[in-house]
Length: 74
Image (tube, rainbow, N blue to C red; front, side, top):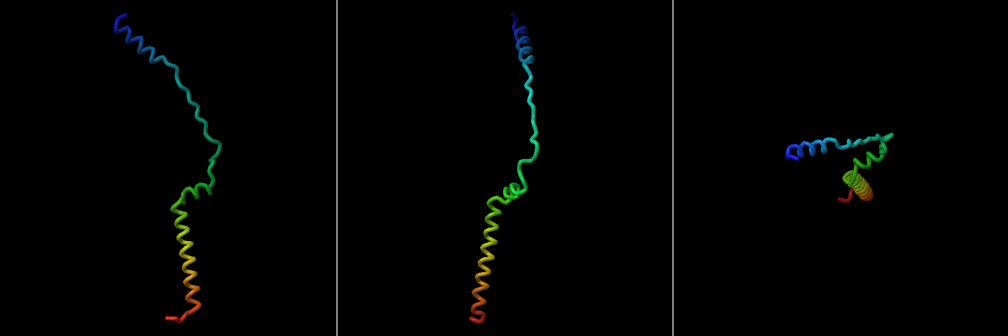
């Protein structure tokens, strides 16, 4: 065998390999609901923001209540 025939037969062997067939199956419906999407979007920063707003409302209500007990104490 010469080098040329050896190269030609090796090229043919590489080209005659079996094809790989992949079947893609789509899911029937979207597995995530609206609540899951909203909670994922908020994440930790959203929870911290809501806690800060809640703390500000409680602190404001406390100050309002303290000032209403002694309105002219200045």
